[in-house]
Length: 63
Image (cartoon, rainbow, N blue to C red; front, side):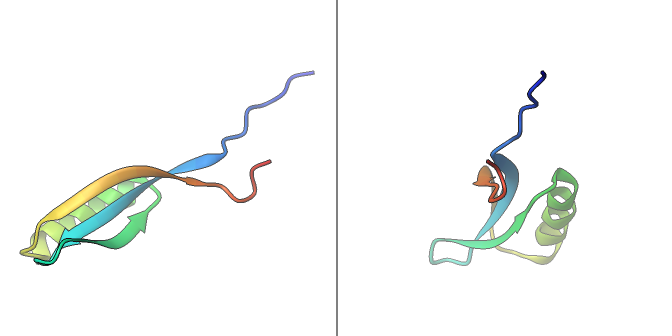
């Protein structure tokens, strides 16, 4: 009998932008490709500093 490992978390990337009053959470992306596309768009369209933080979120269905 082989037991397969099931992840209990998923990776995510959180975008934070500083509008002059501290860092505010903007969006969360769940794939690296989406993160790269949105990072490029934010850098081209926003004069404010952008910070991306990689994190993990709990998967609700994991047992």
